[in-house]
Length: 425
Image (cartoon, rainbow, N blue to C red; front, top):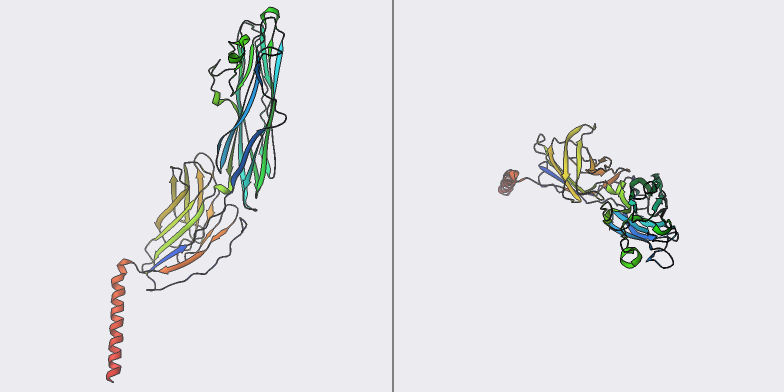
């Protein structure tokens, strides 16, 4: 396996079958694919520090509930998305005592980057915590709630930039207006990248704590208090003493969307794996008419891009000046692209750059095209690799077949006359 960034030795193991010299040259190049990293072995799980589920129950205290869950929302070779959801609820009834319930979130996402030993890669990680601390006045005293910031980190190979943490302390209380409801909606995010080389096992960890309290005052009891982060409370359906509990349900106060709340993590593979790869390239040149334009064709594939992207191809002469260029746009999600253009012969290199229209851009790539010989060198963003030429054949065009036949006929006639003269002498 060659190193990305190291040239593959050019192998001039080609053959030339000349039918009529100097008519049409077609250079064919063998397909070559640069290895692309992929994401594998995804798992998501709560850790020992995560609070155990509780209830819904009113046994030994006021109605209360604590639940959390993890799930994978999507997963491909190029990206995945996960969600951690939770609910935390309490409601002290009449003659009850002030009671709090806490929850510690602690979970981990593990995955592998499957790459060649010297292949460079980068993953981007977007995190988002969205939900609401909700107090509902149900005739009790008051309620409070709070959540700490998110502490995020990673282990494994590579280096990181940005942060997985979300600095976002939250709190809510209706103590200033006991007869009213109160809410603290939150929606904060963070972005980080991890870059490395070769295969790696990575682990992302996230933790935070939340607490809700129903503050009682004698006969009135306390108000409903809840944390809503993607799980709807079931207190009302299982405990008769809180059969109208609404602070922790969906859509509930504020008409929230259950699937829209939680702690979300989206990981996307970018970098070398998103570079276009030359699959083949052909050069067709009419050598009988040097002034005629050449037909250049280059096609390849991409990985880890969205449905919409474009590839800019620029054919350059020996001095690096552009002879002609073309933009190939893909809007249907196809992983294959193809450039075909007629322009002045003499291009020695071509550069091409792919751009993911939603955002990601890779670097330029040169393929070292030589029109007369058809040899191609492909330079990936991390270095140079070559595409081996497997053969070139000169084939007469249809318009030249009459001339070819005439030449052969005249040559045959000349040989016949010469042979006859020899016999007669």
